[in-house]
Length: 102
Length: 134
Image 1 (tube, rainbow over the protein chains, first blue to last red):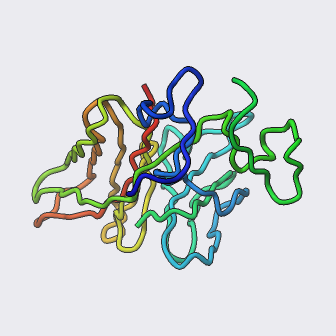
Image 2 (image 1 turned 180 degrees about the vertical axis):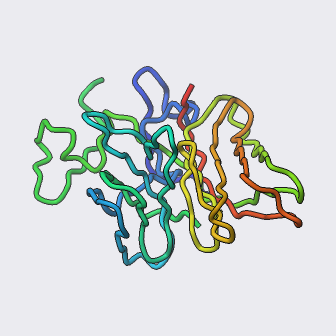
């Protein structure tokens, strides 16, 4: 990539010499972009992206929210397709990203 | 931090807002920065119950990551927690798959509840996030 764009360094770092990890923001890199943030029971949440997007899912357990929480007896994992996100279980708090999973 | 940088609010929110949730970009806070999407495969060898895939990232520290795997045709599963995934061709059995990073690799670890007579190849896709886990 040519040397243009936006960079902001963490406090105490020189933006001209800071390692990438010490930048607060850099337009050189992709930022994960959220298309939708919502809740769902068991079932399929349709999207219109036309591809399988990345997603994050937290499941509510009492007052706790756990990443794809599974019981000790194990439950099936959610998955993404080019049509929607399929949640086999209830109490989902999900983020669908613009960014592709496939 | 001094009063400099970039702030962009959501539609309808004031750039004077003191609620950071109103901002799409706020340079006071670090943004996760990812490399572009990359793809690879993990192969479960015939007769084996486990497979491991190491992907060198070259960062020298353990980075954040997002990983997905196509464990059944056209079904992509996140690997940010240990996942139990039914084997569609034989739902009596399941895969367990997880991922982790260290200072050298992004590692994907697969366990299968059954063996196969032929090699099974699974597509994976991942984003290495420039920012450190540790």
